[in-house]
Length: 191
View (cartoon, rainbow, N blue to C red):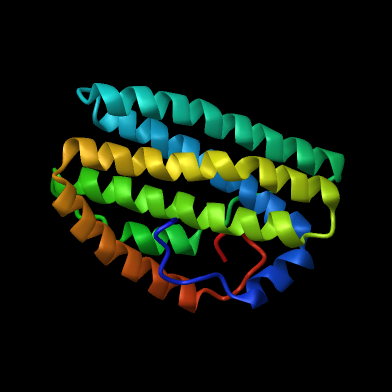
């Protein structure tokens, strides 16, 4: 359903369970960056009315999620620290072609893959973390992450031929799987 060609390894889950503060900090940064990406897209493509409307809604929702993560951190006396970056997302972004209209297509597909990977990891967390509050929290976020993934793909299919979307999506899914297999299993959302 999520279009992921590689599953998260069990070592990642074990690392995350031993450092929930690092996970929550990184999760907060991921939500903030998702909102920023949505705003960037609506700024770059103001003539695409459907995209602008969807990205405006997405930016608001991602900032709400950011605030929700901050509350979980506050409850646990965890401070938000400087954002060290996300090597997973950075690697995916290297595959975004620079020339339009390919840039838009690739950005939408890469965004869908990041949302899909987050959804997969939220599901793992919702099933395995010891803290029942965090299990419920990640369960509650699952549907929105899946919906976000579909929003990006629906927009891609709106602006591009379905066969072009499918072909590029398949290429990028394979690349995403390579990245995931090489990740160092750090206690971060996409580690």
